[in-house]
Length: 365
Image (tube, rainbow, N blue to C red; front, top):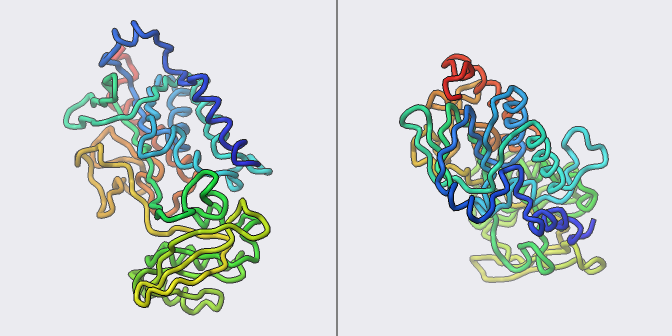
């Protein structure tokens, strides 16, 4: 699929202002509804697989959820990280793969079908100090008996010539931030690959990529790894892994036979200043993720990396009635299918909570 074809579903949505199923407001009614108070039993914040799976389950349980999908929240379009992915080949039910944007369009349509009210606004702040909870978006406030957080986490990316999107960049055309998601793609098979990073994730992704690549280079800006000893040793003992110490990528350039895909990297040794060419058909960032939790204002327990802490085996957070699903609380797996699974869990946990407090018997009706 061409780069333009991949963007067409999103372009069509933008051109037709496809912000449904939120109510189609005229300019006058929009002003009247500005900062209007809405009430719901479940408010979902997010737009990826976790958010929409939670919405589907909550809507089918007749909880009439409200979902804020955001607008370029954390620099990503509604639909989350999958909208930055080309072909998704590991989501069940699509044997031939599916474009990431199309997959999320389908998830959104399914949420809509069962009655989820969706607003294309970014949530700025929340108030979890008292119940019912308050969720403040750009032009409205929602009063909710329960809240499901599914705001995700954004993979950290480096900026250098050729690292971005568009005609002059190789993002999704050889550059990725998820080896597990993309490493098995045909363009990487039996080709030299590279990973940037020095932590456990970099070691794990480099080891994973040895199944597919002819050689895997770990590019690290320092002369030692911060990864755990066991993960370091596992990578260093692998004959298909070579480490480029004290090195950074300065440029990504095209393949000689196919200018549309990555062909190599210009790598600079930060000690000697020498720049060399490294043939690589794939480059994977493994420098961490940033969970979208700043807007919470410290009202929930977070771990040292900023992820929402949930009680083992549940999606319950430190605040009763607030649940978390997807990558915002998962820094280990970070897959679309695991996010969807926790979205289901969050909706069921919220439903049980609402039954406990008697909300379903009409307290807010």
